[in-house]
Length: 213
Image 1 (cartoon, rainbow, N blue to C red):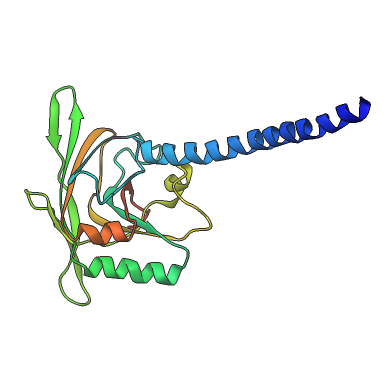
Image 2: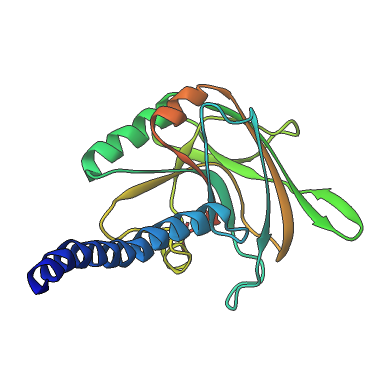
């Protein structure tokens, strides 16, 4: 009888160990999902949103610009970010996206108790091979092409949007040199070469501009 009981305990013990091992792995998996969900669901600058091939033609995002201790009207830009494993390949991809002449239409509004107020944006446009100029975004919100830009590293890190082991590049459609703290709504539609952004796994990015830009 003792032998039979001992044999019965072995598979039972193995089952318990297996269950404990499974429980031990679950929190790590859940934690990874929570981190991803938090990055996708952030509503304060900086934030990202995915651009899917099956998603709506127009992306609408409401977000908050919190007060910054050192800057009451910080510069904020609207664009995309791409990430990869190899910095050289990533730089080549960023250059291709700039040359692709992606066309987007975007409107930014500040929302308060009195209603919605349109916010003027600017962008960088090349004059010739060596010179670029800052120009206001047209009234219809058309942004013809992306241009190189840099997000503020500190606030991106604080938001958990930067990986120390994975290089990334940022490109902009437009920016505001000074955005008051408050609640905003962005409408963005990519009318030309959206597939290039989808294939590059680009994410919509709304972020603070790097200091000195």
